[in-house]
Image 1 (spheres, rainbow, N blue to C red):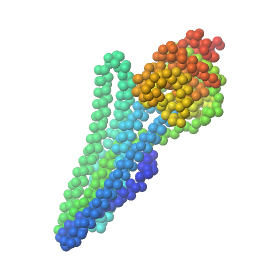
Image 2 (cartoon, rainbow, N blue to C red):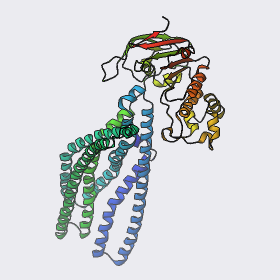
Image 3 (cartoon, one colour):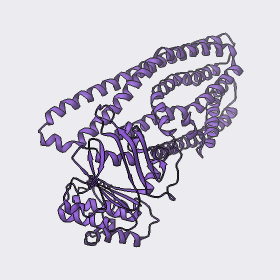
Length: 543
């Protein structure tokens, strides 16, 4: 399993194992210390007792120190595993093709990065890390019992096996309950995200009461599933605890009987009582651990699927020209029977400025989304620079193509990081040039913190035009060979629209593709080639 590598490859794993072994053996040895103290009280001298007490004190201090190091190491090992899992998970998600990402959706991956990694830590990683100490403690207790009296060992093992029996009774039920909880948790996250994204719509239709009712239903279903899962684990845990406690009482009673008949010393009664804990505790813990691991199976399986996803082999686009061709491309959105594109064919060569117009819903944006690999289940052939689009990764495509959409997105971070996309190697001079070309220079200079001004969530402290200019500056900075304008003018004032479009059309040695509702002659005159979208196909104007 992939998850094991995060534990085994951690730098603190070796020290963790060593300290688990030492701590477990010292804990078992403490039973002999206490047994000998009791025996000295009846058979030894005061001087021997005093000397042994000092030895016992030193032993306890050393044992506690080792257990402290063991626990400390365990915490840092757990932290390291959590960090690496989340880092790799984010890298796997952010590295996906757009089509792969959209199939599961944002809420699915958000749940993986938050709720499910927390559940993984509690139910899987912590339980796995508990095993070395429990195994060593159990093994050392077995050896100690063999040394003292093997008959007692047999009795304790029989009692311990009764505890294991309860695991098999509840195990499958726990796994089923956990799988149901996992599914409801994902659905809950998706619905909450959906409701909050549509906050304005809810308010504008005074639909708070209806949405409150919907939320109460999904919230109630989730919490009922959560309590069902917890109850199943609780039943297993308390059943195991009951058997464990009864076993301890029985072992102590049998040991006392053996001591009365001279088979073992009085001190050995205490030793066996403590050793029973060393045997029954791992067995009882095994019940909880197995329950936790059973519950974690769906989560581990799901996260490993994401972590194991490999990006397809990429072809380098640096040496490609900017030619784009669609040949007999047909496309229908999933769960929709209406074809958006119907045997659509066209070819764009060289650094031309192309305008694509058409009615709303005609399929203009769909063409660009196919080109950007939002979807891969189309029929026909799409090529970029004479290479099949399906052979290229999203990373390769966006290395060549810049995209300015009608919904400008800004991160909740500084203006600098929004433009540079966190690339600290970009010189400030290049950022300043992009500010001037995008018309942002005046705005940035007017802000007290300049480029380091924080953009609030969803850019709420910026106007629509300012957000679009930040996206434009980002586009200029990374100097793409092909630039797509996808109805970018929506929501912008006429002055901002003209500035942005003119800034891009002035670029030399670039292919510019503009998707727009504006079919005026004045607008068309800015472009070399004009296509009209109709009936799922592109028609070249004038032909």
